[in-house]
Amino acid sequence: MNELRVESYQDAYAALCEPALRQSLYDAGAVIMDSVLLTLHGTAHKARRQLELRVFRREVLREYEREVFPATLQGTLAPFVAAGRADLVDFGYRVTMNLTADFAGIDRPLGTPAETLKLLELVRTFSEGATLVHSTRDHAEVRVEVEAALGQFVDQFLASSMARRRALLDDGVPPERLDVLTVLLANEDRIDLSDEVLVREIGFYLQAGAHSTANSMVHAVDELFGWLARTPAAAEVRKERLRSEPDFLQRCVHESLRLHPASPVAWRTPVKPVTLRDGRRLEPGDRLVIDLARANCDPSVFGEDAATFNPERKINPQRRIRGRKIYPFGLTFGTGVHLCPGRDLDGGIADDNTSPTHMRGIVTMLVEALLSHGARRDPDMPPIRDQTTQRSNWAQYPVLLEPAG
Ligand code: HEM
Image (cartoon, rainbow, N blue to C red; front, side, top):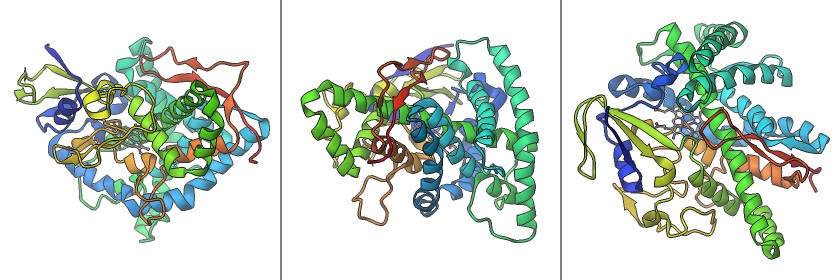
């Protein structure tokens, strides 16, 4: 097998848009990722994606951001504020677990922290299975754990969530909110979907959104702490800007998202011989590594200081690559047919914040809530990197909090 790599923004963009390249990063994680949306290719992918994208329509996302998520955020943060401290990784997973369960369509009838924690425990195991390619643990052992977690997930959460939605559909009662499970059960497009695939699809949705959102939030807070600490003389002015300019805070989050893509690489394998933008050839069985982290730091697109956190960075708004504008978060949400459907939900829509189409994005909302409670590093407990994966995630990130001023 031949392995090629692309690292420039333009080459990465072109590769992500090449229809003859199929997803291959999750081949090792088939125990949870086989035939889920992210690993499907061609017409099967298009059909499933069209069906599921109904859940990610902008009006649905906007209503969720404005009407549903603030209560989830407040309820999850309150006990941490009362304790005067939080581990950002723990907080991030608890809050985003509820977010992705809402989108996937998993009911939490008790609404208790213990119930969220149970779901979280299962979903952490799914995540380990999905990102097996980057895991430093014994792969066979992880697979056994994922199989067991899938069984528990069906018994404790999925079966009852399916039954409630089936009953509503049978009675012709419209759901209070659209979710992936509902659209898959209604299956208005009559796509091919076995029960086994449905279980993995919902499990995949739960972990895809939770893992990436929680990690993105921790990275954004860490970058902001670093930005404030680097220039102590300007720290108070900068803090005030973060407090009073919500657009600027969103800009900071986008800058952090650019520097910390959820997965540093995407992998693709050709379904037929492919010639890359730079003229190199790939044959079926070869692997193309698309280095998203490096593409996001391409100086020809993001400037000479592309590798540093600089929320003042200017990106030429007129510049287009393959006819598309350049997003301040680069290729962190991917592009092409697998473009992340959670992009606007998590990143928001960075237009004029008085516009009715504006969205702050979940990651910005999380960071804003933490800053409003004076979040600062715990001087006695430094953050710890996650050693169980080659991804640059945090295992623990303790912060101190205060009641809102
Ligand atoms: C900061 C947060 C997030 C990041 C950085 C992120 C990143 C990505 C990336 C890079 C891809 C494409 C991977 C590839 O092309 O190989 C992707 C796909 C996907 N993401 Fe996200 N994601 C985030 C949040 C979410 C959320 C909140 C959800 C759901 C609620 C979600 C659901 C999905 C799904 C379903 C796909 C597969 C799309 C397809 O294959 O058609 N993501 N995400």
